[in-house]
Length: 103
Image 1 (cartoon, one colour):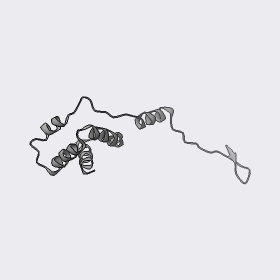
Image 2: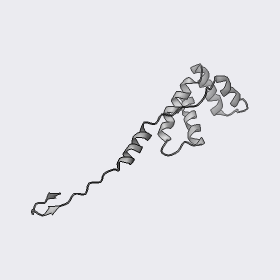
Image 3: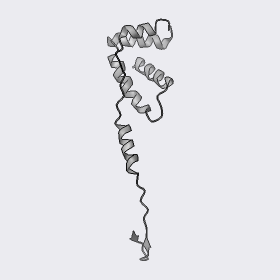
Image 4: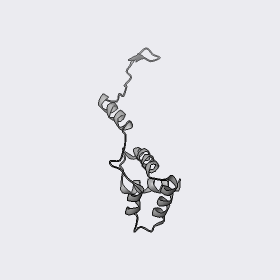
């Protein structure tokens, strides 16, 4: 509540975020994404053995350069956090793998 230039009482409407929404936003913003289980380079090669696409070849080359999948797993988990609110789909993961392979 305040007064305007003519000394009339004015009311200020303050929009507050409900505490539960603030907590939910905090939890989502601080959510950690991880992959269950181990993934070895040989396992990736097994999955991609019949895939002759440019994306598969680029990924295998990048993983060979990195000498394993650890960097890819960390990078993917970090990048996919940005999609938690909108959804992590197969296409989103495919695009993130493509970007990783091109880096």
